[in-house]
Length: 84
Image (cartoon, rainbow, N blue to C red; front, side, top):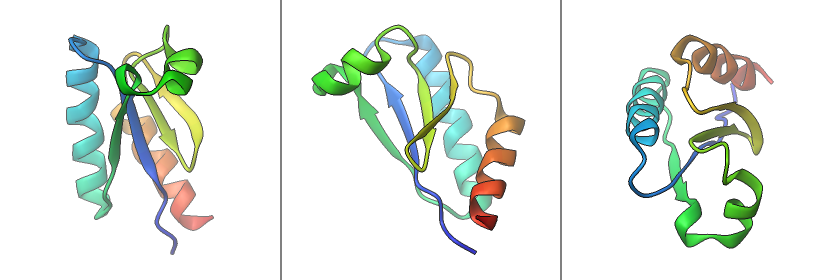
């Protein structure tokens, strides 16, 4: 089984981002995976791409969810990515 890369794109002072962080941390932990957070505040390219959709979850570089991160959908996406 492979380990998918999970990235949460956030911004400062974002209540949806706080909830997304909890969801991503829970799903990643259950799957025994790490994850990374990148802020659009620090990255012009991310800001240009995702400014209106934050928070955004990327799995293996593909946008999988935004705004309100669905825990069950993220879990299914991670499981599918692990299977390849």
